[in-house]
Amino acid sequence: MAETLNFTRAVERLHVTQSTLSHQIRQMEEELGVVLFDRSGKKVRMTEAGELLRSYMAPALAQIDRGVQALRNPGDAPTSHIRLGTTPSFNRRMVPLCVSTFLNQHPGHQVTVEELSAGAIAQGIVNDALDLAVSYQPAETGDLWFEPLYKEEMRLVVAASHPLARWRRVRMVELHHLRMVLLPESFATRQLLEECFEAAGAVPLVVAQLNSISPMIELIRLTDLAGIITETAVQPTADLRVIPLEDPTPVRTPGLLWRRGASRSPTVRQMAEIIRQAVGEAG
Image (tube, rainbow, N blue to C red):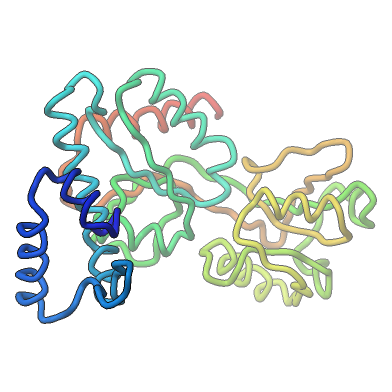
């Protein structure tokens, strides 16, 4: 009824009489203590309460439909669904590569990738909204298990026309009052950089904050802004320079993140192994 907003079409779809449908709707409204449909005009409309209930019920009903479809046609149904979390830097190359490898090996499976901040990823693992993540080690690991994969340096990235473009190395103190684009402060990477700036006595001019690496790189390419990006997420090109940083050098340790004590399905373990192999081959 919520889809058609028409009693005639609804009873045809449900294969019941109009009186039966009307009785069921009234019974539901009485049990809930709210009016779900406005029948006062020529057309039936959903009330605000009806729309609210529908917003919660629709995903559950869709999941039930998929389950019924899987029982009727088991060959057409995915055998597993992996929910993978990742930060923006890993979602540029490594995660798409690993997902493609996994799907080539398991064409009947599904993968959902969520690009989030490290904090949101940790929360998603704890809340069981994610099965696995490629992220950085969270500050609090009580409910989380972190498996380090490798260490990576963060590099200064500027356009080829930038005054620092020809420098072989740049000290953090030399970024004082430099116009920059960085990740937002909610990102663990930004917090690491702030600690490095403070240690070097540098205060950059952060004139732009972007929560994704690809647009950040494009903005650097088009402007006089400098950025600091993990070495695995950006490569030097004809119009882009990637320069090592020192005193101190920002270093991050990416790894796999699981919920401590959680049951890991065979497909999740296979995805984790694909990620480990990709890291080993890249190294």
